[in-house]
Structure formats: C-alpha cells, structure tokens
Image 1 (cartoon, rainbow, N blue to C red):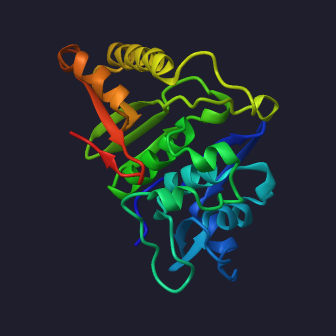
Image 2 (cartoon, one colour):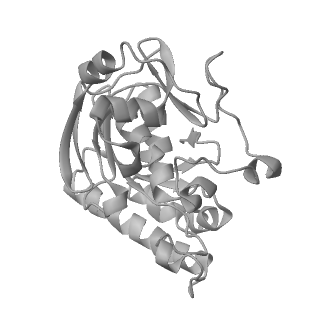
Length: 258
C-alpha cells in the first residue's frame, strides 16, 4: 500500500535544483526490473525496489552523487512506502525491531559511507526515519530540509487533519568526524557534552517556532539515547509549559510520539 504524500517535490542536490513527481517515478520505473534489495526498499507500482535504484532511475541522478537516506527522504515525501533491513524480492520487506551485535558487525551497506551506515543516529538518518513514519501514518510532508548542506529553516513540516507540525531534528554526536580527511581523528568534545549543546539548540529552535507559528505543533525529534532522555526529563516542565513535544526515534527507525 502506498501512503499519502505530495504529488511533486522540489529539492536541491549537490547545488542543482530538481523537481520530481509521483508520475515521474511510476512511469520511469514501469518497465524496470527491481535489483536485489540490500537494505532499504520502496514500493512503486506494486513492486519493491531498492531505494537507491528507484531514486536513480526516477531522477536520472547517478547513485554515486547521493546517499540512501536522501533517496528515502524524498521518496517518502512523495508518499511511497519505505521499509528497511529487508529480504530480497520474494516477500514484502520486514522491518527488524532491533539490531543485534552480530548484525552491527556485518559488512556495511555499500550504498552508504562507513560512518552513516554504521551509525543509525545521524541527523540525516533520524530525519529519514521520521519522514518515512509520518508519511506512513497519513501525514502530508510539506517541507524537508537538506541536512547534508545544513539548510536553514524547519527540518520537517507536515500536515494532517487540519494540523500542521514543525519538527526540529537532531542526531546524536559520534566520536569521530564525518569528513573523510579527518576519519582517523577523535573529537576533543565528548559526545555527551556535545549532545547537551545540540539539545539546547533544538529547544531554542522549537521555542522560536512557537513564537513564529503559534497555531502549529512544535516538536523536537531525537534519537533515543539515555543522555537525551535525561535532558528531556530535566526540562519536561518547561517544555510542557511552552507546548513543545519531544518525539523519539529508535534504532529500528520507529517513531515514538506522546
């Protein structure tokens, strides 16, 4: 089953503006045989395709120029059903509820850089899981910011049943750098300390949204880590008074909302 979404989207990738519609996706994949699915899949025209293949064929952008979470985010915004950690071809994809130590040690998805593939809690991956979950739950995705370019503005805007929600998304800091040139370096700031800074930034952004759009629901979406849980508990009263919600995204990509 394909979910609700926009008929078309516009986005910028590698400095180039693109427009993609559901008609484009479905017509360009109509006579294409699905490749073997490694990790993430999208349902188009009644068939499961690897998201990398589907996005490449639909847009004409070579897969070397984008990552899996980019494809997931934009296809989900169009309303397509996305599933992860799947079995190839023979059955509908099944999303696993957890990642075991053995699975974590398995070879990485070749479609993603090593750090992104190994860390589910990057901002891009949290945002992709969030957009997928919202689209599957009947939300219309109005806007999705490009985290790779640190695009300014609200990270995700969605609407359903006359409600609009603006969501500030944060990842959880890693110990290393995403920049390949610094891959062997360890950050001087501990992840726990940096998470505190990121949490403060998210709260400020959510408060600003409350002032700018008082009729919207203001939400912070965070990967489910004890550090963030503790910070949320410390500020729960203030967040409630400001009518700011916190949603949690777990390792399996499930979004937990109050």
